[in-house]
Image (cartoon, rainbow, N blue to C red; front, side, top):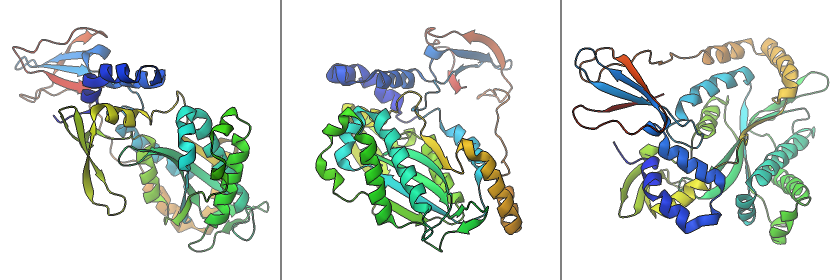
Length: 376
């Protein structure tokens, strides 16, 4: 078994907490504790025995923390299937709003506040500009996902929006966006900057932001993504993925962590190396506030407008019946791989339940048999 995030946290969390002391928020400490305890005897579990060869298997519980790399991947497919309910048979665009570097220190100090403003300002700016008949001239829908890291774990907050290329008018007509064009990004970035500034101005931390940031260009990207299926899968990986997955961690040696990443400019795989404490610091800066919603819906995708979404779908179903049939076929769930029994790793026989391991019980003995660990 390779190196895992839990190995790094387990070995270095005491040193990390001692060095950074009061600068480690309670939320980050909770994540450290959850990752270290995930799928260990500390969280309890079950013991199974093989009736054929007496092999024992220990099935430990998962921590289910959303920042744990072991606990999130299985939820991605379920989320994707749910999103099919909102799909429209039209082209889509992917919009990206990036927080300027000058505001990131404030965002790290007040993440709940800044992330909320980032969502609201970007969504409001997009909807307002889309109402202009020169561009769309109707009510649009947006599905947004917050993303805070780069491939090297650096802090880089931005929001991706998947947006159907068109809008619904007051006359209940669908107005398609121009081919390969949704909104002018220069005008959108200025509007985004203004709305973000106006919202932040009401907060005490507004004085922490350099005044020059309100005169510089803000980064907004908008690109066509076809029918949106591939872009949706791309966003799904960020909904349930943490800053780094265990397979990307290559080595922990002499107090340093070596990991692989894909270079944005070339697409080539490279390796990076950080001290264990710096690696932990980079990972933990992406821990979200408790209960923070990182996927949000606006316009006709918002929960309060679901009846309008149904009307739009009905309208487009009549206009594009073949495209809707294609979406329906794409939405069919695949085969589910549910494990209904535990098989013996030695002889293949179905193992039988032996006992429950309560939380905090000591580790199972390591001599006399091979220990097998499963998760729930």
